[in-house]
Image (cartoon, rainbow, N blue to C red; front, top):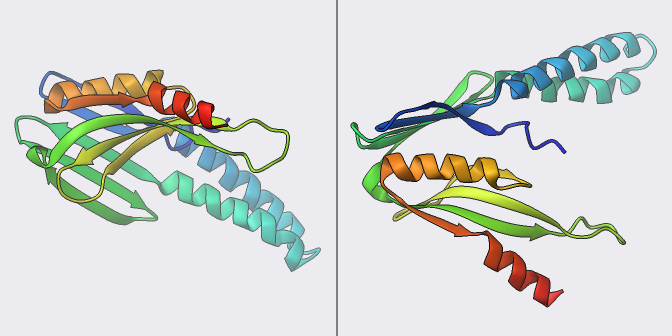
Amino acid sequence: MFDWIGSLRIRERSHVRVVLSLSRTTQLAGLLLLAAGALVATRAWPVSVWLAFLPALVAIFGAVLVTLRRELTIDREAGVLRVDQSAFGMANRQVVPLFHLRAVVIVARRRADGMRGLPATGRYVAYLDRRVGDAIYLDEARRCAALLRMAEAIADVAELRLEYEAAPEMASEEKLD
C-alpha cells in the first residue's frame, strides 16, 4: 500500500551513467504528515500532554521523511558507485569501485502477515551483490516491473550480471506451505 514512500526512481540515464534518487512523493508525504501531526499536536497540547504525544510522533516521522535524501550514482567513466544518504542533515556517503560489485539481484521473499486467516504476502527485493562486504540494498516492492527496469539500467551501465531469482523462490516456498 505504501510502496511509493522511500522508493528509488531513475532520475537520469545515459549509456555511461545512471542516477537513482528518492521519488518526490516521499517528501510530499512527509510534509503532509508533518503538517497534520503538528496541527493536531498543538491543538491537543492544552487539553493533555499525553493526548498530544501520538500526533507529535507522527509529526516527527513526517520530518524524517521530509529531510530524507538518498541518491545512488553509477558512473562507468569514473568506475564508481556513489551512495549519498542523509536525514536531518546527517550525511552518509560511500564510494564503491564498480569492480567490487558482482551482480544486480532481484529476489522474491515471502513474508507472513502474522494474522490468522490472511495469506502470506510476496515482496520483491533488489540489491547490488558485492564481492567484498555487505550487499547494497536498492529497493523493494510488491510488483517487480519497476525494480526490473532499475536493475536492467544498472546492469547495462555498470556491466554487471542481472540475477532474477524471483519466480523459483516463490514457487519453492509455495510447495512448502
